Image (cartoon, rainbow, N blue to C red):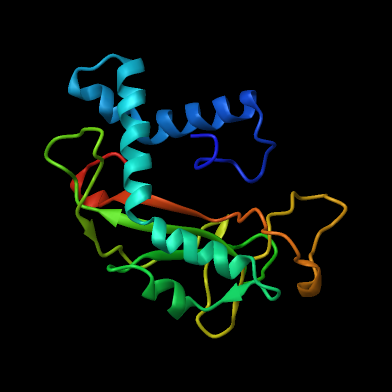
Length: 185
């Protein structure tokens, strides 16, 4: 799990991973406990389900990582959307005002039985709306795929020519359950 589910804004140490895993379960996975399982068993089922769902969209993740490793790490909104069978939400950073990819959300129908398979029926997401953290990526200009740089870091930008190794892609592809179905997100 430490290789697939990381927090790009923090060092991947045991303590920070525990913090993000706890946050994710508390925010998105508690409905797994509503099925009658204890919290520990529910957490295991939730994380297995989430990783299984991420595996189903891994081809898209691999393609985005390949684009991010290019000398000019960028793509377009249309190319990202074409990676998925259903409409996704594509968000860029609202912090720096650049069209830099932050999050891709995929949406799923609420399963009748919440189990470790996770949601399996992908559906079209609603239209993306901006938040204080995320803006809706523009389709009128390239989307940059530069590595995440923490605020206040000494290297606030990476020139296109210096991207010689595979960057740590800050994006996540967040499986999301249809919110109208009252499911865990």
